[in-house]
Length: 520
Image 1 (tube, helix red, strand yellow):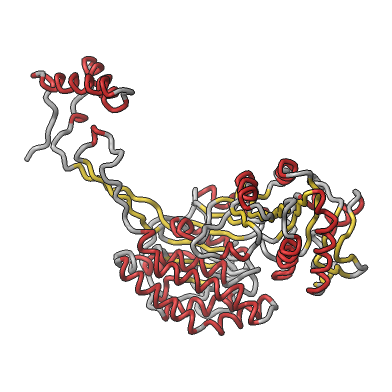
Image 2 (image 1 turned 45 degrees about the horizontal axis):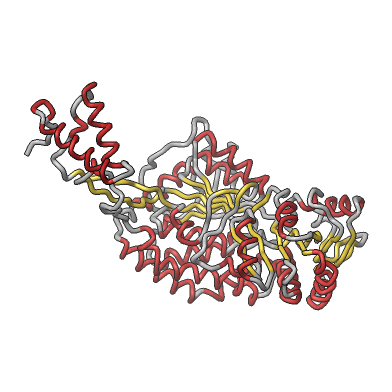
């Protein structure tokens, strides 16, 4: 990539603290925004803007976050209209699925970020005896420059929460929007500046995938990526030369477990909601449904009725090109259509298939579509066995009236989050982390844990004692001393520990055993 780059840039500056890999690109393809800047210069300016915030107190950050929350509330309608325009949904749906959870997260961070990121002092509890007089503090330091590669399915909520968390931790942020996402994120960037943050603290890169690759090559301190597993693997390859850390929130193929005592109406309504929300383009939408044997027929009939009430989604064969072959392959292998239909030129969705097997590609892939397969199982053991044949482990849901039994099943499910008697919506709680395992990625976003992902721990240790026995060279005669110290700290009985204490005291009373001390 050797073309010149143009960025939507706000200016601020400090010298970069790390360089990109040798031969890495410093510019990318042109964009129609005003003011072309090479990535190298943009990076310098981002670090300078970030440096201006490093000495802020937690109280300063809290005030800015509080003001940012207020500004976002004032601009809620504008944000919703932009998100609705990009997604092709109603403004009401954008308010409910994008703006409101973003505001909840902003308020949570304004109230709690200073406590989550504040220094932690372990105290004397569990401190080894030989470190008596040593105090320590664990601080959270900003990483520097965070690159957020945002998805297109929820362009405001997902990128917005990550962006605000990065700011709350004291970082500068680059955001590579998904196609169409710039129009959604520009008002968010403006709100950040309106709340008092330096103008250069956020930079919106062009929407081209090349922009993300060039940014990684230029050098950032962490990458937060939300998207497909295939793209996640490519990004990891780009990060390896510079050992840049990342959080990868990748695809899901979420499982729904419907136990024998489940409320069928609730379960069917939940699955209908999950399949229809955002036209199926939700990473934790239901894809694999495991139903305990006696409920299989009744559940399928109830789900069909619910889907008929909500109305179909028409998807062209071109739009379904990636996953339609998986459906046809499953049908050839014995599956059948429970709800929805295949037409010569389009798919009537949501499309629900029965007679599927866990090993079918349909049940192994991240289809990211209003598509699900239903599998009958004998009980929890078979359901878990079938579910674990899929490499994705993002989220899951369990439906059952016996909450204790449902929780026992949840404990066995390999997933980043498990919701009982509901799906999707409760995971937007701003107090909760979100992330997956296996092919669904690693690391988390959102919640306290997501905020900590934007920082690195720094340990500050102070030795207030004048005792420095470790300065003295080791001698063979010290072996009994360390054996006694071992028993003093870890002996199984009080008698052994007291005996060890006596031997330690005797050792240091010997004339040739005086410890090294610091001078006054």
